[in-house]
Amino acid sequence: MARYRLGLYEKSMPTALGLPEKLRETRAAGFDFLELSVDETPEKLERLKLDAAGRRALVGAMYDAGVRTETMCLSGHRRFPIGSSEPEVGGAGWRSWPTPWTWPWTSGSG
Image (cartoon, rainbow, N blue to C red; front, side):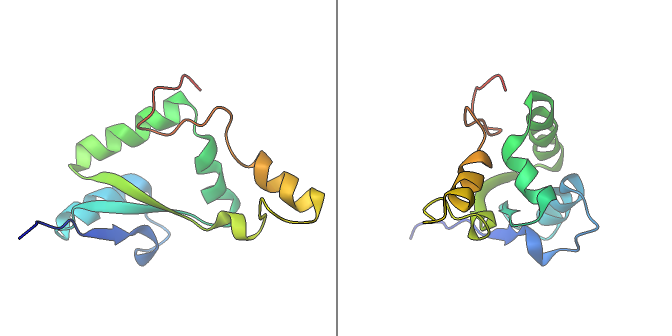
């Protein structure tokens, strides 16, 4: 029988907790990983534009907590759908993506 991995959705925890605390609580509760949320709020959308220092801080928090972020729920584009027939809406969706795409597990210099 294959072993499964069980993750905890970030939004199941109080919003007052920062990511380092959420990662520690995820491990303490016995979960294997934390699923990040990138919803329509400006704070969460900014996660798509983490610079190198922000990515290092997130990776450091994962190492410190002993748990990773393995998945991400990207619901932020409901507000700015990339495929919108309205150019200003679709353009806002495209502009919210980082260029080049760099996330903690990539090697981009951003």
